Image (cartoon, rainbow, N blue to C red):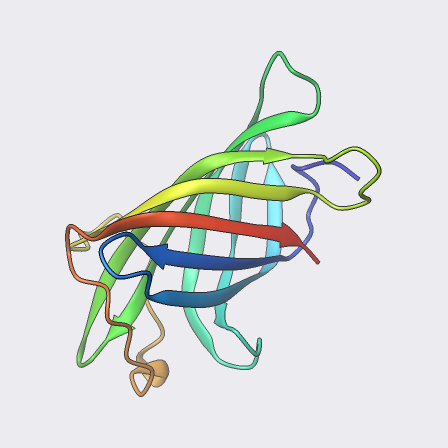
Length: 139
């Protein structure tokens, strides 16, 4: 198994200013020529929140990969963009890749993946400019 294989991810975002956590699942992952596409779901994996795009790029270190994820989350009657960047790696003796990185919340623009309008009942409390860490593992 490699970081850029088409596996789902469980992710946890933690906001810097107050340690607020948001748990997500990245599903339906397809990586082709370094471009990543998929969907963002709630923690249970039952409600689709957004489309997902990003990149997965090898480095000179065989077991470390640079990974980005870009998506939006419903926020009251609006949405918030999330850009998550970091590295995926294969821990020794562990069969699945892990991810460590940082996120920044931003006001979405036309290039931001669209959130699911049917998921507006899920309120995410990130605001534009919020930053934090992101971690997770393949499932």
